[in-house]
Image 1 (cartoon, helix red, strand yellow):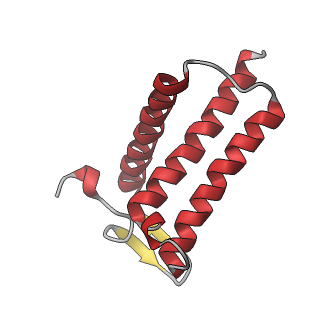
Image 2 (cartoon, rainbow, N blue to C red; image 1 turned 120 degrees about the horizontal axis):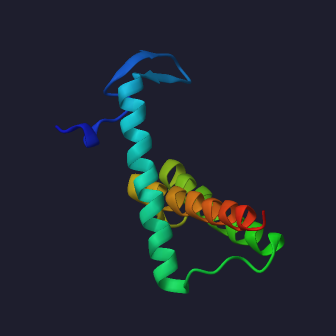
Length: 115
């Protein structure tokens, strides 16, 4: 197993019913992996739609809300398998969470560009 395959529960220092505590090394590796996924998603979005910002703040929040709704659906289908279990699962949750983060980054970029 290489370091990119670490999961928090495999390398937990302490667990309780609601929280998993991990080492700083594992946290750093998982953060880097997550940030790489988000960066790749932003690149994919730019390739699809160009390097453009939202029309306005409301548009940004609507797109972010839509992506968050898809993440909620993926989690719900993973936990409950209600209507469309093919939308659930770890990979779909990661994909949707990555898209939420990428849209949030795009919104931050828009705000920073206004400075």
